[in-house]
Amino acid sequence: MAHLNPTLTTEPGQDRTLILNMGPQHPSTHGVLRVLLEIDGETVVRIMPDIGYLHTGIEKTCEAKFYQQVVPLTDRIDYLCPLTNNLCYVLAVEKLLGLEIPPKAQWMRVLLNELTRINSHLVWLGTHALDIGAMTVFLYCFREREDVLRMFEMVSGQRMMTSYFRVGGLALEPPLGFFEKVRDFARRFPERVDEYENLLTGNPIWMMRTKGVARITAEDAIALGASGPTLRGSGVDFDLRRDMPYSGYESFQFQVPVAQEGDVFARYICRVRELRESINIVRQAVDGMPQGPIKADAPKVVLPDREKMKTQMEALIYHFKIITEGFAVPEGEVYQAVESPRGEMGYYVVSDGTAKPYRVHMRAACLANLQLLHKMCEGRLIADVVAAIGSIDIVLGEIDR
Amino acid sequence: MPVAPAITDIEQLKGHPAIALLLASASVTVQEAKFDREEMTIYVGRDSIREACALLREDPHCPFDYLSDITCVDWYPQEPRFEVVYHLLSLSRKERVRLKVKLEGSSPALESVTSVWPGANYFEREVFDLFGVRFNGHPYLRRLLMPEDWEGHPLRKDYPVEGYR
Image (tube, rainbow over all chains, first blue to last red; front, side, top):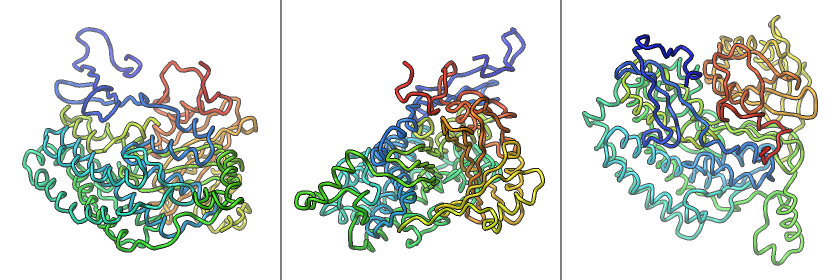
């Protein structure tokens, strides 16, 4: 412990402060975050996050896999938004290959990404409210989350580890009845957001616990590399979906919610408004869904259809080659960033011309956001630490990788 | 859609504001530049990375004011072995630029950019932890993800995927 706090002495009577260990098994740290708090009474003097408990070496594992085999690994990085990770990775590889993706696949990707954002924000809202003491919201959020997970199961056969996007398009056609289900959900959902807001937004206890708490200025947020709702809650109007569009986001109309105060409440209100914007994008995507193929025309990269494989010799050969040898990607490097529910999720992929990536690096939004914690919490009460951790919406899988 | 060939001639790329700025400065050495797949990469000298970042951050015309990411690539057994990669973003111009520093394998070290962006702290610690690249002037250069007593740097190419144990 002494190495974590070089100024701490063990002499009696010297120090007023106490070191308190919070986590890694603590319900309010959302996974295995360990936080060391140096406290003076109830006031936090210093705060030091200790991470790495969930480090599984995914970046190293990627280097030993074919390009298409990396997709299921990306699910496991941020388990609350697997499809966003799938998307970011396949976009990076497609950029390396110079692949053109058909419009239907792009729109499906947008649709599913916004559903993922809703899924992730619902988990955040439920657990964040639970941390602060509002029990009911959790149950409401998980009710709607179940609907979203059922839709994921419909398209991919999996509730969480979807791996639905493939280099060059989608794994499968969306099944019959999927769009009706999404439409039905999009019709019901805004009312449900009203329900959450009725419970929280005007609630005096909620406001006392969140307003003016864990404040962060725009300058600090930029200097420390914050992104996503954490950045927009401090009044910086930047969203990758609108400002550096990818996967066809330029064809959608949506607002980017921004709040000026930079406190826990501002970040809360940004995310709740994002829920409404996301369902709006989902509705646009379902209504304007283009027709056509779901895979790019690149037989050496994209697996052939099942039917073709059974009837055409060439398709069978390509299938065999892709499965056994992978596909070679031209030399080069690419950094692709997408707006994940937590901020800027970036994939840096380096190719040396072979069928396995030379290096895959994930820029985790939460890792940078976590650095804000000391600015937010030092000089404030221990109870505010819980609110602050909840408000930056961390996922330890993404931080530790 | 075939990928267009990369442009590596620095004379052709001079028009890019970041390159023009770095070339004009006396304290920054620009070694190479590359424009590939719509992405700009600038190789700067090992001793000028902090200065280059500070200049790009403060430039009034085209501020690259946001540090997205720092990472590293190991080209073992080639020398110079390591490439430390910085991804900068301009929030106002909505543009990215990539800075790179090449480092020899014997004792890889370079200057920390934490004085320019405090947010570089965790990124540099991660690179130190997984690649063993030292950042001089870093306020707290300790392992970030691996245990404190871990031996070796797992993301180096000469470190086996299964580990030593």
